[in-house]
View (cartoon, rainbow, N blue to C red):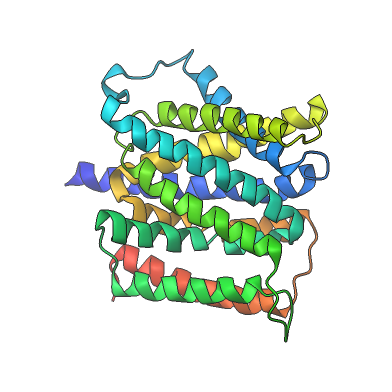
Length: 293
């Protein structure tokens, strides 16, 4: 029991650290997006993650016992495809709305993850988690409107929500592989999603960015996707997709703080209304995770 408890604590800490590293990516994408087209941003973020972790295997190899089997290849393929779409839509969405909004909308990934886990893989959703899902959805709708009295949706917010749905589905695919070597999974995600993204970017005739910006994007990817994803997969191994996603839901709030401090943004009233709703939802998630009454 004590070993299980220690594993649970390590997994929870890994999920929170993963959220912190990912949150730092949002303001970085916002800044680098001025010099790197969204399609290339997504591609180099994942290539940085995959190639960076591949280098770490030089010091510690991948466990043969944890290698992927043929039966798991379809999950890995789905994971790569969803990652490619998710990161490209996120990079495009970041440029069309402010970083704080993007960070807060990231909470919708919890909704997509939990619903996919429930409907596709029969994972349990408690009453508290279901209530949190409703609140997060309401807050996401608030953030998605262009302005007060308008029924026009913000294109950037819609793109971010699409990326959240893709990552919610991808989280559940990754969950099927979470007992495997975390670096191997992240290397597969990074290298294949990155290469697929590069092919797409070149096919769309996007302008190739300068080498210095490519390096910065890849370094961002190594930390915010490589190290972060490895920690998240480890957390899923002991927590499950829905519960790991609950801990990871701290990422948007970290992202809001980074965006306000680094980008010096000044969100409108809609943002603060959504923030309060998201905080309420997070309290429910924390209580659900801890089993509190």
